[in-house]
Image (cartoon, rainbow, N blue to C red):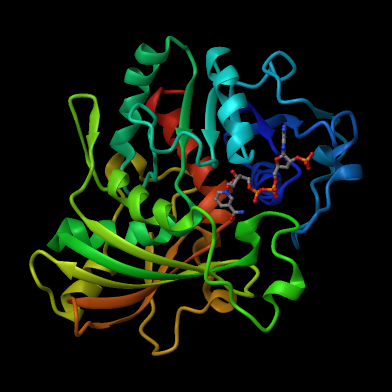
Length: 350
Ligand SMILES: NC(=O)c1ccc[n+]([C@@H]2O[C@H](COP(=O)([O-])OP(=O)(O)OC[C@H]3O[C@@H](n4cnc5c(N)ncnc54)[C@H](OP(=O)(O)O)[C@@H]3O)[C@@H](O)[C@H]2O)c1
């Protein structure tokens, strides 16, 4: 039997990705959709401004949009949240108190010590934090979060290199897609023929979230990795796919060929292998001099694979490379669903 799930923020950029990915998911079945008062009571197909190339699933198009209230969504065991951060901070705990497991894309709780910030191919063991969370907060449900869309691909590449050689410092510059700003996002007159070298709040997320995910879980706490990061984040006129140019300093210097082998052969920890959304492969290493490119490479592994290219020596640190990750798939809805699959496996539902 499939697990009944609901989507909060179902009409937004990330919400639409949830709808599209969950319409045919082997483990989960969407039983309810919720959004703001603006959309409540309307049929999903009537109110959503559908932006994806795949068709709106007919069954979900007929559903009435509900308010994000645990009583209205009582049938769902698991709730996917694509709410803006402020709303998530207010609304998600109501669901956890009502016994629901919330898989959230929002930044509201990511850095709280008892909330797992999860990427199953990086730190699936951090899911054990939910036991501490339940004890601390006195709720039966749980909140699990996935990282910011720019941290996602970068963290996968750093994890592979950190496990093999240790990463001490990284200097990164992002080129982030428009869909990362939600809908309607950045005005066309601001971004066409242009680049905006400022994304509010983004740099601190990219400088802190990887440290939590690469940290070790010890005695019920995540001890953050000592890695130091400096990030410049930029919005560019690309629709989907965040690119990050990274220079890294290693603990044990490695040549390009050994680093290439480590990246290409990286495997997820065993707890997270064989889940339906697991990226296949986890990392795709491109050896052409001009790849990865967002338009050509973002759908690698159904948008779940981290694509790394331009691996070469760095004159300041040790190595430099380019990472591409699909921001609304691996960096948002796909990542949240992958976390929910990990949870379902962890608690023995599947
Ligand atoms: N876009 C990305 O690449 C990306 C990646 C990672 C994480 N995230 C995070 O994911 C979340 C969603 O992002 P997005 O890009 O999908 O945003 P978005 O396009 O602006 O969509 C926001 C959604 O939240 C709903 N909403 C707004 N206020 C609400 C309220 N008071 N009560 C209930 N629902 C409300 C909206 O419903 P209405 O349509 O009814 O207004 C809409 O469905 C954000 O926290 C964002 O930071 C986004």
